[in-house]
Image (cartoon, rainbow, N blue to C red; front, side, top):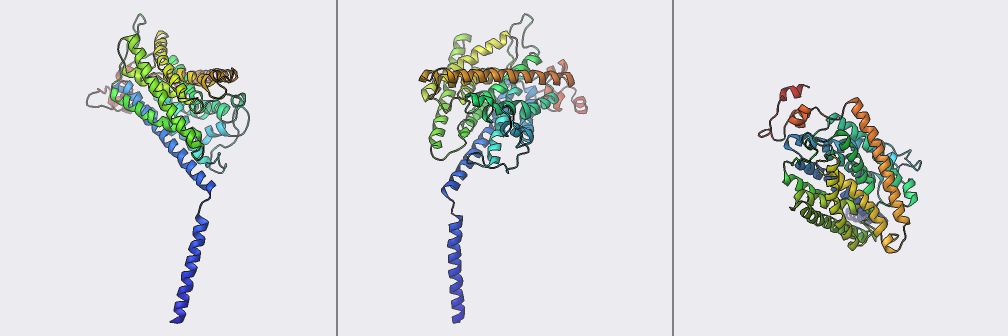
Length: 447
């Protein structure tokens, strides 16, 4: 009995000592805690940006006709599917791999062995950058909506996410020649939105307008979308996602990063609100009525414009940037109409025009180095060079890409298919089978 008590006491003591030792070994250091918090924050931000795919899908579906809703949804889904595989295998290495000032030469098929990026694991950083690449690709689907072959769109999505976007991204965020020049784009007004916007402009121009968009004398004939509710919900989702897009680009949350995240989030929201109200007012003055579509695109324009300077400007500057973004939406839409370029959802005014404006705004309003802060014109000049470089690279490669696709498979569906709707001919289905006719459905399924 005495021996059992001694053994029991010894066992209890061993468990106590062992438990204490285990607790001491498991207790994380301050650096480990910071790494964990930063990683969780960046992943949560990535998940918010991922949810923006839903916002784009609803916005584009709502702003287009019901007979093309499935086609719009398919393109938004496939963008992320293709983007995930292509950016993992090739795009990330071209964008963030070590190599030349123009593209990376390693880190292909990223697997986590590449080490940390800052304070976070490389796979968390890859996930965050992936959702940005998919966003750039999705911008184009709205501008080319209702008349593009689905097979041709697949080819475009592969090329943009694996080559065009990552190579330009390397110039800015991968240590390339533009970053060495001093070009600054905190979260992607140019890297993401202007790249997507230039590709959208070239694609819409090469496709030509939808049937009935312009009259015989060139007059503009609006083609209303089928659901203002879906479009509005899509913009609210995008607005929410932008709180991952911009604050997440801090790539940290601990210490002084908390102050930075708070400022970025506030600037993002202020610019969005200012863009929405100024677009509404200007459209009201120009067209005679306050318009929902212009107001929604004004919000997006403000969000795009503040994406580059959000970490470098004051809230007052964010307000001014947004107030300029709204009228740019209205007047660039009118400009596109005069050029007979058909952009069903307003992707070019929101993403390209305001991507350029937001990038230049860094050189004007940045607290450190901005022209209006007494920093001279060096930063503004660097920003201008970056804007021009993006235009030359993305517009040039997009033209080559779309011309090649057109030569091989064709870009545009037939007149019969466009008039009947892409849902029935391209996908053999209808989003609203009880109200949308499906001509030749049997034949479309066999084809």
